Image 1 (cartoon, rainbow, N blue to C red):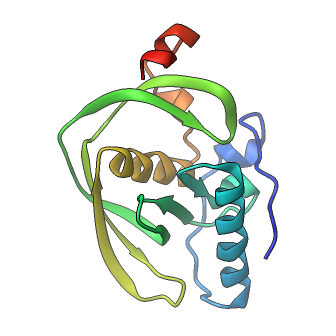
Image 2 (cartoon, one colour; image 1 turned 180 degrees about the vertical axis):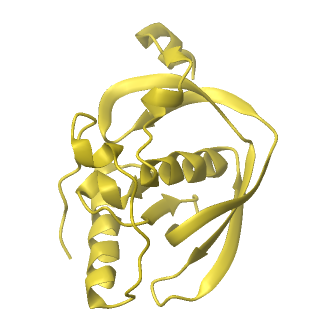
Length: 156
């Protein structure tokens, strides 16, 4: 395993649509393992493959109990609404006010290609939506209402 460099929002790779994963092989497993190590090292709650320069539909989400590996994920269902502070490992030091669903259900494949569904509320739902946006070349700065000031951030 190894740490991967996290690209910043100026990198063109973060603004491209990712391709589906077709091969569930050792190369994918190494990517997932490296992304896990990178996510833990960066103290984040989610990481998408394009953030480490790989244009494939792969994300990791820490739901508080475990780190979920989501390959070729799609949103099946959302409900409710939350508005809150959102940041990104590719946009260090900045946070924006972003509206997201309060609940999200996702269908994805695991590292072996098996399909499964998972869901989450609040931060997990926010993270699902944020990371899946990355797969379509969308950063939270493109969907935020505005950047938060230091004072506002302290309130969150």
